[in-house]
Length: 283
Image 1 (tube, rainbow, N blue to C red):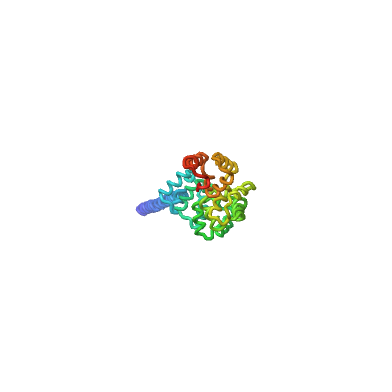
Image 2 (cartoon, helix red, strand yellow; image 1 turned 90 degrees about the vertical axis):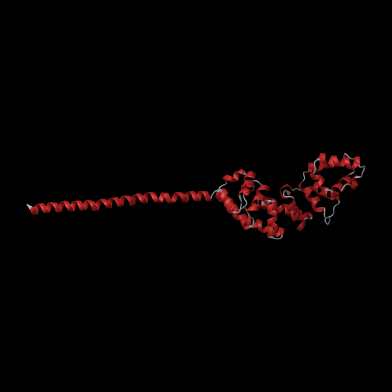
């Protein structure tokens, strides 16, 4: 009896020990499985958020040196940049960075041309930069010109920019004079047009190519509409100015072409009517 009882107790002990040994293994397995199911999600989620955050236009512009005040100025001029797509924005900023343009330069460029980043600047980029460096004489001068007139990177290169610059050089404006006009008058390239009538107007001013006023006379006539020039000439005729006096006056003071008819009338009334002076003395 005792041997059988001993065998029965031994059997129960082995079964109990086996159960105790098996259960912890299952517990460990379940914990491990649960751990590997949860942890990848917990690790990946912050990385995804960080990537999304890094690709935000605000963060991108900050990386390029724009402070909070700079961002305020940029978004006030071009609000859509807040939601700009990262890839095109980064591509354009990389091109601008290769030209030495900084965050503060970008602020000035957007202030000057709010829709600058909406334009494609990668077309003929290398060829355009090579042409502009040769035109301005150095990358430093090009840098200055681009800040004043970012559209130099967006004008049609072969159909607009090169033909207009070639036209001015043919008329007699080149080198430092052409650079000065391109920097001081950002609309020179898109608004320039010449025909026989305009060329005749330039001749009537009798301003020689060697004169300091020549570049101003040519460029202002070049960007002005024919109708505008005719209107200004007709307005001066009301003060009993001869044709010679009118064109002599425009040769000495070509900025008259940029003033309104009312302003010119007030000034001419004062000079000729009140002061009783001749049109020849008008600066």
